[in-house]
Length: 224
Image 1: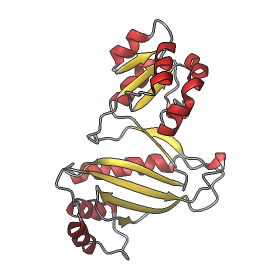
Image 2 (image 1 turned 90 degrees about the horizontal axis):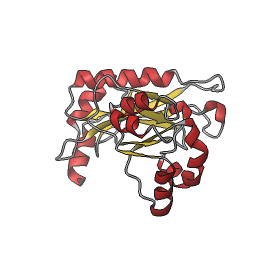
Image 3 (image 1 turned 45 degrees about the horizontal axis):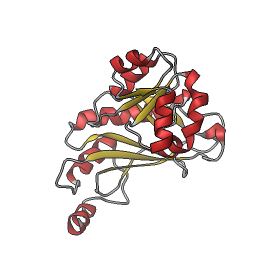
Image 4 (image 1 turned 120 degrees about the vertical axis):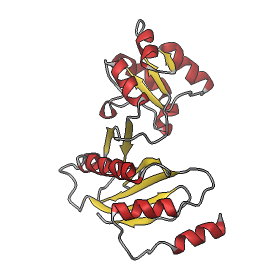
């Protein structure tokens, strides 16, 4: 990767802020992997992540598929299993599933949906799900009575985004071979959704910086 990456870095002007269109084109050109990688965007926010009134957490469905499919797990009450399975959940259960995860620590899903009635019981495995970002949350629409709809949405590509401990937000825009116009639409859709999460508690400039890059490619600074 060394020489390929160094050559790719030379193509990027670190003192320049590129337009989103330019950044996407350049990111595709400077991808260093021999396989089809991803294009990702990283946004540095002017928030204090330790203050609850500034935390960023929301969901969106990008206009174009990112190429990444998600396995959905569902924690449901008795009688709801079939609805969850029919909606597309690959792992379905109630207290039995909680017990299984508690004992074995095995998780076969990328996102978890739960009925409100299951949340007190999920406390038993919060230390397993939490660090993996899998604990259902009402803000993400993953705690809901309408299990079927939520499962279908997440299985179809709905994704959650939230700030990390440093106040940054990361989003997968799509595969690097996705049409540039579609990647641009995904970028704009994400940025619009992100801007709507600004709370009254944020006093600084909300978006402080944006970088975009392909898998194992150099970072490209984007105009805000």
